[in-house]
Every structure is written in structure tokens, then in C-alpha cells.
Image (cartoon, rainbow, N blue to C red; front, side, top):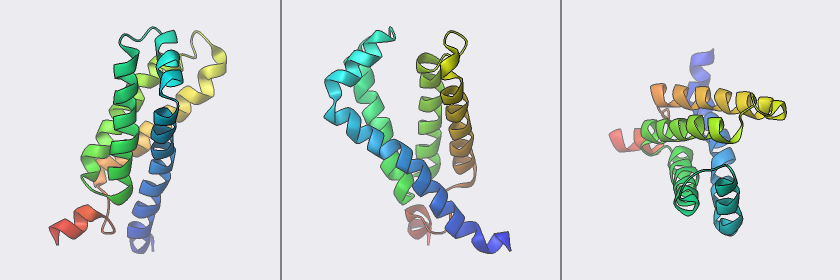
Amino acid sequence: MLNKLQNPLSLISRILLALLFVPAGFNKIAGFAGTAGYIASKGVPLPEVAAAIAIAVELGLGLLLLVGLQTRWAALGIAVFTFVITFIFHGFWADPTQSLAFFKNMAIVGGLLSVAAWGGGAWSLDAKRSA
């Protein structure tokens, strides 16, 4: 039974994951100065460059993930990005209130790695291109 649901579940998975990243990318564009300031407050060097990278990953790779184009690479790129920034911005060992955000992000990384491993499914642009 679950095999029959593989394609719709793959699509829903990509949509829900992209729903987290694409709006965040747009918000970073709209509030670029504030985003760069927040990044600087965490001690990240070149905060404007870091903000631009965050926008490229969240918006660019997020849109690729959404439509299922270069899905495995997009998911892997977002997973690596999310893994790295989680240790910078959600250090629960220094601030226990960050524990939920830290582990939520690690769960998201797990979901992204699953998409990277299995691809975007038959209802993706990758599948359309290979047909």
C-alpha cells in the first residue's frame, strides 16, 4: 500500500521542506540589513556575504527542491547548510532555550538527507527530464 503512496508522499515531502526554506530566503532579502546584523551578532565573519549565501541556499536551493530539479544536490546542499548554521545559531549547550530549535533542525537535516538519498520521486522535474 505504501508503495502506491511513494510519489505523492515524495511530492508532499519536498513541498513541506521547501515551505520552511523558500519564505525564509524571501524574508532575508526583505530584511537584509537586519539579517546581516543578526549574523554579525553571532560572531560570523563577513555577515553580508553570509547573508547572501543564506539567501542563495534557502531561496535558490529551496526552489530547486520544491520543483524537484537537481533534487538530490539541492537537498544535500540545504542539509549541509542547515547542519552548520544550527551549531552557530542554536547552541543549546550555552542557552538551554535553544534545545528545541537545535533538535528540530537536526530532524530537518535527517529529512533532507533522505531526499538526497532517494531523490525527488516520479512527480519531479528530474523524473520528467529522465523520461
